[in-house]
Image: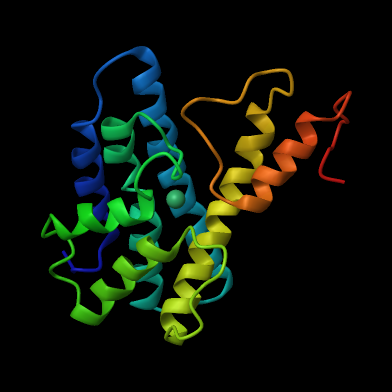
Length: 195
Ligand SMILES: [Fe+2]
């Protein structure tokens, strides 16, 4: 199996997150939320790399980064019982700590490992540092787009305008938070509040 073969990373991911599946029904549902999100972001990233016609190994690096972009969510929830980065260390930073604590990325070329770690670290930044390599900038932007492609329908599907804000779940992008705040102050929801 090639070091860039996604199935190797998928197996590691599935076995890593198994250790977080315990506790109440709510705890398990919150784990599922991030597992399913990670896998859907991977699907969105694959669609984007296909449409951009990115070749290997760049496309493989994007896929690995997509799968692991939120890996810090699992220890974040277990240690701090929240997905809110303002109430705990940033899940992006925690994700890098997780990946540094395993040898799963060791078979990648050092520069490619650095791209995966850099993407995990930067993926939730609304503004990216100016001096990034073009490869790093491209990969982070693809992951951010894949993340948004997944988050927007999920927000819409779960948006209950009458409900109190979740204690656990918050949305990473400030623009999304503002939109939700605006939506929740509307008197009556429209069929398509994005318009
Ligand atoms: Fe994230």
